[in-house]
Amino acid sequence: MITGKNYIGNQLSSEGDITFKTFNPELNVSIQNNFSQATAEEIENAVAKAAEAFDVYKHFSGAKKAIFLRAIADEIEALDEKLINVYCSETGLPVGRAAGERGRTVFQLRSFADLVEEGSWVEASIDTGIPDRTPAPKPDLRKMNIPLGPVVVFGASNFPLAYSTAGGDTAAALAAGCPVIVKSHPMHAGTGELIASAIIKAVEKTGMPNGVFSNINSKDYDAGQQLVSHPKVKAVGFTGSIKGGRALLDIAAKREEPIPVFAEMGSINPVVVLPKALQNRGNEIANTYAGSITLGTGQFCTNPGLILGIVGEELSSFIDELGSKIKEINPSCMLHPNIHGAYEKGKQQAINQNEVTIVANLDGEIQTNYASQGVATVSGKTFLENSTLHHEVFGPFSIVVACENLEELEEIVAGLEGQLTGTIISDDDEISNYSELVAKMQNRVGRLIFNGVPTGVEVCPSMVHGGPYPASTDSRFTAVGINSIKRWVRPFSFQNWPNSLLPDELKDENPLQITRLVNGELNKS
Image (cartoon, rainbow, N blue to C red; front, side, top):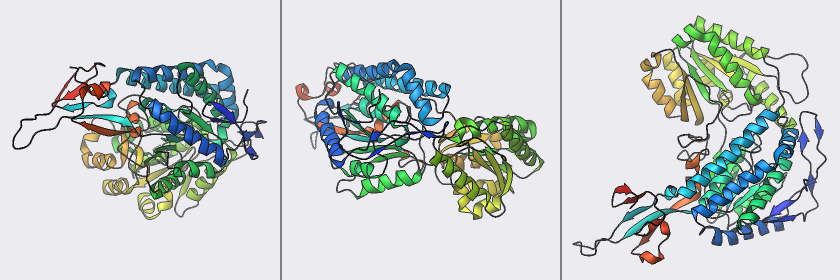
């Protein structure tokens, strides 16, 4: 049963009079659940509980946190078909997507459980003292990562599970030792409440402190502003638009004590198709990219919104084939009428620009809230002169830029804003002749793909899901994979501290048997 209430720590609460409903975009109807918008008092209570929980939770061993994280994964799986049904009703996404995203969510939780159970992630470093060193004694210094404090996580509109209530941000923060307050996304508040109930069950079953997790409902910006401004909140995780992420970054920066905001935001994910690749397999590439552009109705942050090539018959044939292939794909439902409306507005703004040619734009009637996928093309010169064409259109739409020559192509790549991904499509060893292009692309993206598609983010230690601003607010960190835990910790040193009072990670005897850097050498001794 979905109550429509807020989880303030372990307790359900609904003090306010303002309510809202979620929406089924497939049926184009509101869902008959009223969600209570959190009051300022409820938010204050959630933060206070998180701060109290932090004083206890930050001392928990990796083994104890691992039990908690695995329990969350188990409880999510126990929700079974109820979770899948609510997810699909609030998103218009198919059952297969829901099941796949649930699998990714529990995999992330268990991956972090393995990480903190093993323990070496704290990056323990020991430089033993030399009291009789001259001309000055060398102090004993021992360093490790420690948690920041309560973290606010904003649920994402396009991933109700993997980037939301128990998604990667939450899993990483809990693994680091930080309590989490989730500001649930109003488009999938029912899904969020079910996941929150699973987390609370895991809290209670594993003896975690009350307040280590809270779930806040809100349909407007006030709750988010109050949370990010609160002096007891120490970091923020966000996945969404540039406008939303930048607003949170500015709020956090203006605090008396500024805090980090780790926001993953907009990206058009440029794809460069080199001439020989177009010549030898242009039709194959067009077919592949028609599928990538429309995958998930184009609602992935890694959707290829920009394709770059050099003018010629091969590029012209590729553009025609891409337009033909994309029109053969059946339209699909977008997440919400507001997202559908924003997509159509953004697409029309792009194709209405001077010297933009429409290659494909589905005509005729399609079902309400379904996206009309499209492709447009423009010259490199026009693209350079018109910054409107550089903006992300969130949905199944892409612009193909016909560059006059390699120099113009490189100029475009060098001038792009920061991106999550970049892709180069090459034939055989063709790419070896484009080292400068590769270098310029590397400077603008967080992940560079060779002969593939950007859609799809593997959860593993080597994945980087981030990039130069505005792809993310801090390009040094990833939002996906176990290394994302580094966002929620800070390095801390003990100097000349008694061995018996040190945390286990830094004691001489290394009771946890973790890998440490001791006097410049990595070992487990």
